[in-house]
Image 1 (spheres, rainbow, N blue to C red):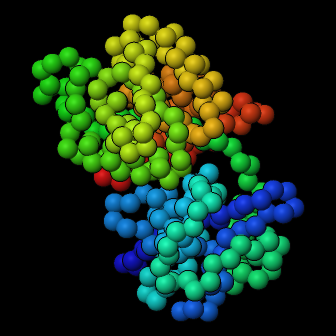
Image 2 (image 1 turned 90 degrees about the vertical axis):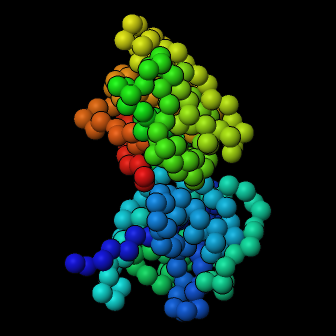
Length: 292
């Protein structure tokens, strides 16, 4: 069986209109000019891979905006599959970098389209330039929780399992890759604890909503829509993306608020990233499965 090597990279743009520049690297081992990318580590989200690899190769810390495309090509007896993302600078500061690239430069996009070494990179750049920059919204199903039959307290107090705690820690890396800046959740323990690792590392508070709990949603379904309307308005006005954590039985109502099809039930720890289309009042959706 052919081995698949998963990798991830980013098209990092800066500037506006006709003065946009893209971050490129020169690798002496290959003698090429390319977009920064690298191999995924075990149990790592591909989005996290892209941010980490750009940082290691260029010294620039970035945050992702949206997925772009997937490219694949043979490497010896393997197939390398690269997930590309659109990214932007998270800070103007430049840190240390590894030795894989000997030159890191910002090129005008017209020069990059002409002088990048690989057609796939050029095609990825062209796609990035055509993509709308829309702030994403994260809908999360809480991480793996203890079985109801094994829990003797209030269901709202049910805790995460060891696997669930590891999923929550992994999710913190995913949220950080996109620069999530607002957190909201059902007030139930298993939802709050799913967001706690990221809240702790980022210094953010989690807005707790009783209306999004299973018990409240069953007793007052209209309360879910009211809570989502409040959160949607906050998400629109916030500078950075928002993540909202909920329960399997409540998620359909949360998705329906945005006019989303609910044919894809989220697994514990799975994330749906919504890209609202303000013109058509719909949303493109990227589903990211749990890594653990």
